[in-house]
Image 1 (cartoon, rainbow, N blue to C red):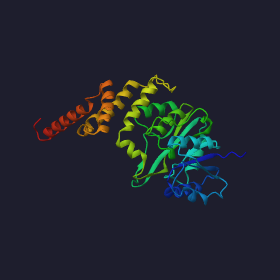
Image 2: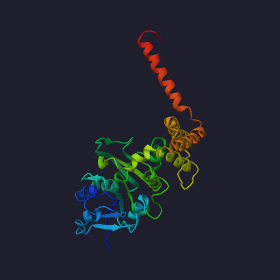
Image 3: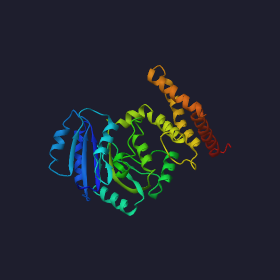
Image 4: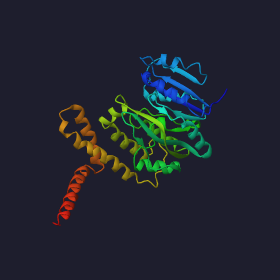
Length: 317
């Protein structure tokens, strides 16, 4: 059986209106040793009709789930079906720069210890910004793990990341997270090797109103999940990450400080049941990590600094 170099995996659900552009971006790649696996999560739109015209290309495969198995279930189904040496996801509403696969494969060939490759992202749709990251080039997997824990999950969306398929049997996307599903997976991959960040916007990420990201952020799920993930890493619950040189207490306090902000943001809306639950969850975390007053301290210190600066400029201090 022929093994392609790259498996491009396109999980989709009711994104027929975006899917054509995504598939075209793969077929326009300068690197052509790939298979495309489209995993349809029981869409109710015309996804099958869109895909049908591409099935004459022997590199393209289409699978339709008998029932909707959820976003994470569909991502893992894609992994099960992949045959390539490298795994490259493409969200159905995103697209690739024509040179993405060529440049990713070049890095993989030059750096055999690298288990995960990512790049800058080019926004399109309602936001055309270029999303850069704190570092570029080659770093050990541990260094990037440490850096993301101390900052944020900047490694990127699935459309921006490629990893080796030899980890498929021991890694998978976990359904317990809504916001951190991909970042948590990248942390798993970094336990098997190193990381390379290409300083070019090779992945094009569509920004639009129907994304799950916006609803998650609206309910502050990301804050709570980040704290829970860091708790589990510190306690080695399901993770074997070396944290001996990472101040996990400081990492937890940083995440808890975000939850503390939620306490004050939802105060005016405590008459709503959902907001009361957010308040309780955020309060418990902020209280446990002794950061409940941090948002107020920043406001007071910030105003005090501005006041002193203004007086100095006026010759009063």
